Image (tube, rainbow, N blue to C red; front, side, top):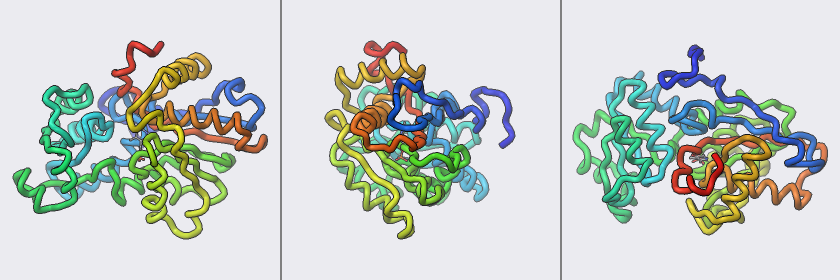
Length: 306
Ligand SMILES: *Cc1c(COP(=O)(O)O)cnc(C)c1O
């Protein structure tokens, strides 16, 4: 990777660093606990989103496509990341957005700012998103579109997420990540050696259903070395309460790391519960992946000290 300076025009892999958590946070429950700060990668295309997109953007450019088309809801970090990455690489971008959104969410406003065309469809219609004939009725020049599925959940998305393994030392016994579509976990699980157990935290109710969906992409030897936790959803996807906000502020005070309310706060809350529950052995070395999303904390702004 070539870029050197930290600016909006480049995404430098070296911006993401490993930061040890304050010892006090995990006391003597494990030997080490660090956080991979993918949130520092770029102010807009933060976290895992760039890894899931980068091989898709490269393929679109290489094959001569002019436009990226993708899908998401009004609060989708994937949409903003796609809008920004497309603009950066001289591609048009179009999003099929779930729901009407008479007033734009801050996320959708950002998408517009980065030149993304938004096509709103009802929640019912959105279910057709994998039907080419339905899409043909919505957008012109269908053949000129490079389609990125919702959440960047395709082969190139998984392979790109696997690149996050660059940062991960073999000495870690556990690698922890939040799960939305499961693309990041699947990509990393494929790439990391089986002795490194992966723990995935789903921030929605009954997220354990993702287990089969992720296993589908794994060879047999990798299906048994990862787990999914879905107890810490705080009422559902995007939901939060006082306790979560307090936890985020405490975590910030203790580690100087801002978590995002949708994914990483719930993940680290769950991690604290597992630590208190003596889930780990004292010799374990744990790496938690901060997958970004901090810019999405706007609805919690008045509650947070950061
Ligand atoms: C999108 C997102 C995830 C989920 O990633 P998947 O690859 O869809 O599982 C996790 N954390 C953050 C901050 C995200 O924005």
